[in-house]
Length: 285
Ligand code: 8Y4
Image (cartoon, rainbow, N blue to C red):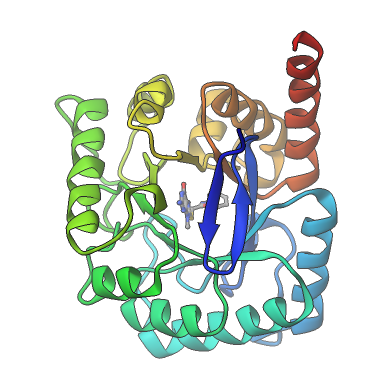
């Protein structure tokens, strides 16, 4: 019995953990290793070969975003976001069969991306911006609703919760209800605790250890811990580009705990870890 997520005209198989490869099309992506910009312009040839590499490494989805959401990041204009995301989306959809996810909170970007062949909407603000709910409902694409406390500029100043797991779950359940009331199908809603988005290490660890509770909602769960500060804090590693092993280990653990989609920088390494584990499952059966 295959679990399939309908993504417009394409499909995503969720009977095994899916890998979402991160394609950073913002100019400030120093910690992602390999900036895709040269002399202030996105290098489309470099970008497409990065996509091709991720796909041959085993990515099921390519996530593209034109807004930096790292702690302290300054907001971008809608036009800037459109200029960064739409040409890349078009170029990828033209050349590859791949599912492309658009990491945006902006309604106009959702609308344009849907027209240009996006397969999934990934919103770190859970469709809270003006028009986003309507744009996503109209798109009839799966949507990832992520939890964030405060805004990127301020979220890591003093994260505070009484019960982080209960509060994040309640938030995502409330947003899910809002989405279904706006006409979205419940099966199209993906939930994400939002690791690192207004959370201390202790909060992130509580959420990680509660992944099963998010899975119990029945919605596919997306986990993004790749190269994040929490991995650095767990291992005492300052540099994001040295967090590969911890990131792969945590992605595998998340998958074992039921996460359906893993948002990662290191596609090949994550894919090998997941495949090794999956081999042992099939041997049992
Ligand atoms: C190094 C490189 C260190 C990147 C930190 C980062 C998530 C997400 C992001 C997530 C979903 C990031 C867009 C933050 N994280 N979308 N987006 N879930 N759904 N930081 O966890 O990767 S951006």
